[in-house]
Image (cartoon, rainbow, N blue to C red):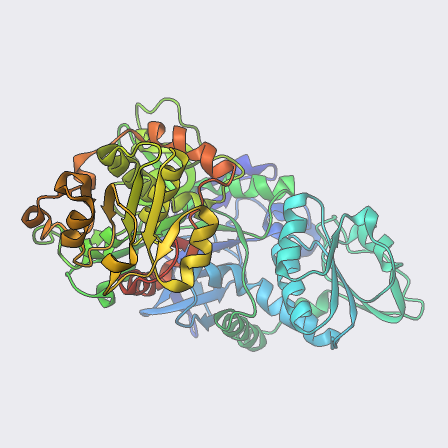
Length: 595
């Protein structure tokens, strides 16, 4: 098996991947096949040589105290005394990971969850309690903000950097500030920083209040004189094995219930551990850092309903010549995905098949011969298959750089919808002043086509559920309810029709336009020839992605093209995402987001 050793004290470069014998369990231990490794700030401090007098570590040693993976066929997370940066570990402190919680999420919560719950329990927070959380953009800080806000406390989050403060605000902090901007008094201070920062903020504790001094990211615990205030030290976050497992499983339950959400700021392949440590050293990381030993991928081995989808743990793919590897942040879900899954688009399966054709993420590996793309570059675009995964291989020609103003989930919703809309409008060629009817205008392709056509000067009528009409009017679309009587409800001449619905509307569309050549369908290939209309598929190609988005991105940036996110599902809920897509009647796009 592979392990990561600290071969000396120093920077991230002292971490090296080594081969080691598989571990042998002792009494009361199990072997965990590791999928995810928790990387803590303490790991980086110890690697640099800090804390030798307390921890007694000397190189070479294998860092790491938390993992998630499989033991005896069960999904588990485990705390170990050391050696966690490994593909296998032996452990006795093993917590079950419940359904509904991913292994990366479990790894991210394994050590901060028990600490946060213990601290909040000890603080006995009540509605209105004035709380200050230092290090509020870190993994433990964000968990504390969430739990304190849920208890009704008035939470102030202190952190350096706009990204960390934004995350603290999103977690429930009523106010977020830099350390120098902290004002007022607090009933409770959770200090995850220590050092001089902690000592100065201790002075903000109101008489009779409590100061929890558990953090040493500043190098040392805060040195304070209680003087009428209660001080609780590191003992509050140190647990006996049984208590640790109980608190970890409680944290997992809170996460499944939606009351405690881990924030993963960086997840990198196992052999890129130096990147994770460098991010911790720079103190720019928001939330957790994780090492991924395997890649999750949504796949199916037989055709059928959403229930045939499963999430497999696979080796992280290596890019071949001319390929790049993406760490996926978000993936789009399209009707074509479940049509593939149902077996409507091809012959017999020759093995497990992935799902997902559009993604947003960051390039984390380059194959031989790749020139131009760079490691760490934020991109979005199309993949041949398998986009619903932690990592996917891609052709650089099918990727575009993602601008900073475009969120990953928004970017992942664009390539298929915009590419299809651009291709179909190229066939229909609407001219300024012409009227285009779009069946199912509230879907991703329908919305993209409508807004592109309007930008080109066309008038757009679109069929959609009545609950979406107000939104569509805001885009400049004239909505109409679909179904029986549609022909009577469209009272003005129609020049062109795009069918994105597949609801047996081709005959009506030909009658409205008077010419089958003026109708294109992307959803009814079975009866297109019968009505003499064109059936357009992605197999017919279309403009290069760069050409499509030369028109699309400026519209998106100025708000003239919007595709709302109808729902965002974690990877483990890919079957639910497919069910929603098949049911239809939603506005915009469904996406899968990384945790």
